[in-house]
Length: 162
Image (cartoon, rainbow, N blue to C red; front, side, top):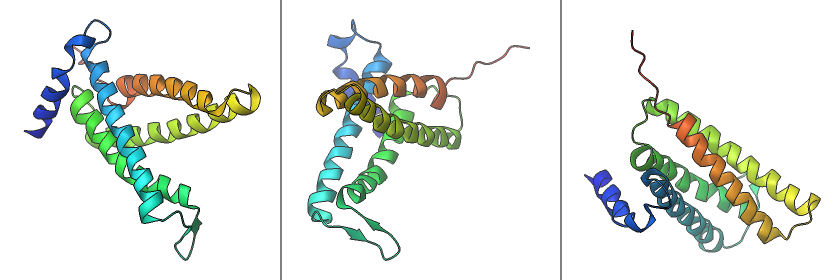
């Protein structure tokens, strides 16, 4: 089974990190990092080779190339991210898949908004260099995302004894 092969592959690299973080956190880091790479790579390919850095005119709406590339990469990274989180990282969740998907979608929207507002705040209000602002924002958003996924999106509901 592919799922078990992926888990075994990730877990092979876990021992050196076992004193630093729990196994689930390591899997989250690997899966999240992989999905981030897929997202950035897809954005790069979309922007440079599919859109050729040109405006995308759909007839009823026009997108600047970086925004169109963002949407294109989102369409790839969103399902990959959800599947990795659901099937590799948070495998013990007792919630139905459609509930997980809806909650994951909400979380992704919140994370996009958090990225926007934190970068804007750090750069425009605190006058932090944009790259450092992005780094700080990423740390905050990743921490928030992990906790939200663990305790909301893919939570394990307790079985009540009668």
